[in-house]
Each structure stands twice: as C-alpha cells, then as structure tokens.
Amino acid sequence: MWKGGSVLRLTGCVLAVFSCAVLAQTAFRTITVTTEPNAAVWLDNVRYGNADPSGKFMIKTVGPGAHSLRVRADGFKEVAKPITAVQNGDIAVPLVKTADPAELGFQEAERLSAVDRQKAIAAYKRVIAMRPGYIDAHVALARAYSDARDYENALKAVRDGRKAKAGVAELSAIEGRIYKETGDEAKAIASFKRAITEGRGFQPEAFTGLGLLYKGRAEGESGDSDVANEEVDFREAAKYLATAVKQLAGAPDGSVVFQLLGLIYEKQKKYREAIALYEDYLRTFPESPEAPTVRSFITQLQKQLAEQP
Image (cartoon, rainbow, N blue to C red; front, side, top):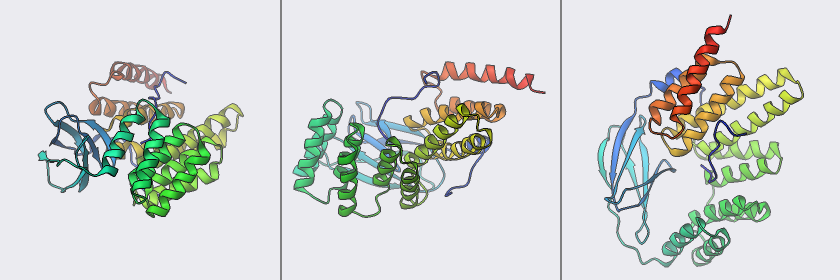
C-alpha cells in the first residue's frame, strides 16, 4: 500500500467478489518471525510492521496457501523466505551483515524518506546510478516523487523502473495512483488493472485504488442526482475494496480499507453487510484505537436495521 495518513471514518474483474460472512470465516494461521531487532517485515509484499527489540514479530492473519515473507534491517542483507501452506508457529529469519554500497545506500534513503523527502529522492538516485537494476530503488523513487506530487518525474521513474525490470506490479499501481490524482480515470483504471495482472491477481494497492476511484465517481453522481450510475459505481467500489480487505488481512493499511468499505455499505443501506464487516474488523484489529468507535457504529447500524420495514 501507498504511504500517507490514515483515512478515518469521521473525516471527510480479476478476483471473485466475496461476502463479509466468508471473510469472517477465513481460517487464519499465526506465525512469529524471529529475526533482528526492529527489522521490517513484509508478507506477500505488504508491510506489516517492525520486529520488537528482541527481534520478534507476530502475524496473526496468515491465510491459507503458500506465502512469501520478506525481512529487512539496517546494515543487513534483505532476506525473502517462502512460507508453505501448512507452516505456522515460529519462523526464524536470520540476517547477515552487508557491505554492499548499493544496499546500504538504499537503506539510508529509506531512513531519509521519513524525515526529508528531497534528500531521500537524491539518495535513491545515487543507488540507481550505482546499480541501475536495483528495482526497489526505482519503485521507491517513483513513490517518493508521487508523494511529492511531482507527477512528471514520478511517471519518468515508473518508465525507468520498467526498463530495469518488466512486469513489476507495484510500479503499475503507483502509475495508476498518479493518473487517478491527475484526473485521468481511463488511464488510472488501465494501470491499476495492469498491476493486478502483473501481480497475478494479488495487488491490494491497485484494488484499493480502483475502489477509491469508483467511490469518488459515485459520490460525484450523488451530488448530481444520477441515482442509476451512483448505484453502479458504489457496487464497483465495494467489489474492489472488498478484495483489498481480503488481501490486506491484518496489515495496518487494512484498517483504513475496512472503514472505507463499511462507509459504502452504509450508503447502500446494506446494514447487515456493514455490521458483519465491522464485526470482522474488531476480530482482526481488537486493539485498534478505532475499535471503540467501530463498536458504536455496530450499535447504530443494529438500530437502523431494526427500523427497516
């Protein structure tokens, strides 16, 4: 998922559609990664967080099938490790020190990205100059330019990244985001769908982007009293966001997408679906700061459901 502030409720086709009931019944496994202290942990290229000072990190929402685990820590070589369909419990991911200047330069750029975007951009460029095929640096550069709203350079970074390596789904997702932000919906949809194809059906950023695009369309049509198209676009938005929720599972970005999907169900007056979704949110994020608010949504929706004819 892209970087940015959380979208809270109170502020202003490739995969099959699934219901909230199916989502709630998903059989999750729990794994505990043991690695270096404070190492960043990804599952299927979705960042879940950082290991604690002892090097432990728990993921409670590992779904059925095989997955890919990726771990990165400053000063160490990044490691990718497969997770089999039956693997659970403790998984050791030992890291080894690296002296690779490109890898160390990329890690420095990642640190800078949190405090000074322009310095991070310069650092990513230095890494690419050292190693033109360093695809993570190309992706990060495109994302940094996009976050800075420098869309011309962001698109150039996407093109350069594709020259370095074809078929990178994240580059197409970033491209879709750029076109969405600049108002070119046709190109945005094409880029997001390209990302989903390149990701072989798994690309939660692209599914979220499509969901947000159709949500924006529907809300515009609501203001224009275009009821028929509003309903169609809200259905499209719900379809794509539901898939994003499933793919994000318990990743931090999933919390935001849950709430966006819940809003759409409420607008559609699908109160049962909204209640089921919010109940699944509480199972997935029981300690979230938004959990008390989500509980109040459920109470309100139950009252509205009871009042329906």
